[in-house]
Length: 88
Image 1 (cartoon, rainbow, N blue to C red):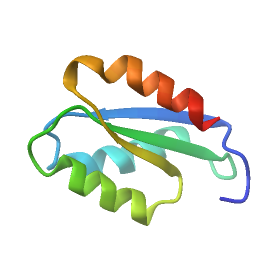
Image 2 (tube, rainbow, N blue to C red):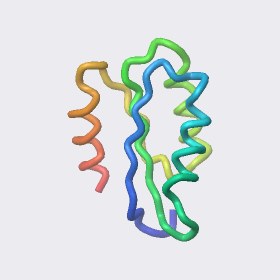
Image 3 (spheres, one colour):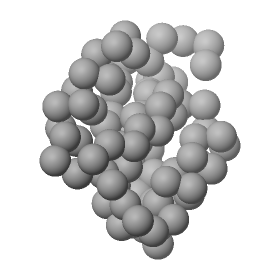
């Protein structure tokens, strides 16, 4: 990524293997006007399906995704905020 991101989005997922790609596309389209740098952090909230695998694949394809985190369901909000703060 050539420019520092000016928008950061934390996207939580739980059992969303069928929706992960659509959510990624919709999120990018909703918040990224052309020329405005964006970063995304995917948080896998303890999914037992293929959500982690799919979101990791998406992150390999899209350099705007700066992290794919796997957390226990009860700790997602606190950990996501802490992790996002460390990325800055």
